[in-house]
Image (tube, rainbow, N blue to C red; front, side, top):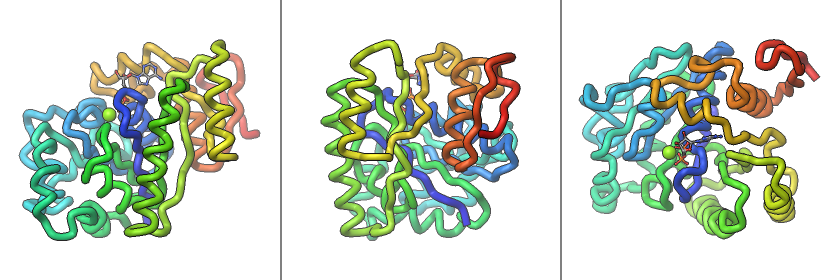
Length: 268
Ligand SMILES: Nc1ncnc2c1ncn2[C@@H]1O[C@H](COP(=O)(O)OP(=O)(O)O)[C@@H](O)[C@H]1O
Ligand SMILES: [Mg+2]
């Protein structure tokens, strides 16, 4: 039965969608069956996986409000092993419609229950808010992965998100665990980066991914080509970083050989 990982942070631009697209692509290349559920009306995961929003008849919106089954919204992407429940702009309206509906925080969970045995991993890309849609994701998930940038203001956001996770845990989903905190767009040369990591480590000991994702232009270019970084520039630092992260997630650590970068890996 697939593990469901919500990738959440109410702050925008911290690398949630980038993380979902690239982890999914790598795990798919490794023979895993992966489903990405795009719950953000901006649809960055949808675009990043090469799906044209204009052509879609059915999306995550229909699944959440109950006008379609998840099986009707599911698409195969052109990337090995990766399926997608896409998002389109109308998802923004679902937020208001959900308020009126029964079981308004457990609708995504109910939908995923009907397909989770078909996958090894299900990643839910959350919107940049602590909205009903994010609550649906946290109720449906086994774990939450929190991408964040190493800035001081990000710490406040983390505290707020964590109190939401605790609330969900106490009311709806007692088995929700923290998958880990992921530092993105990380610049190891800055003192501030290490200070923020140390601060987060104080509150979440042992919960920070060892892999830090560096700022890498290839990661930001890939979505405009509708491709995960592994299909856009396999030898980039961004691809290396997401490969290491995927192995950390799989609990199969890799050590990167220095030359040639990105191709030769050996087990620790
Ligand atoms: N490690 C990175 N290096 C460079 N650019 C990145 C990196 N991660 C994300 N980006 C870019 O930053 C922007 C925000 O990332 P995104 O994954 O969409 O964040 P979120 O989903 O949290 O809003 C996007 O333009 C993306 O391409
Ligand atoms: Mg996003």
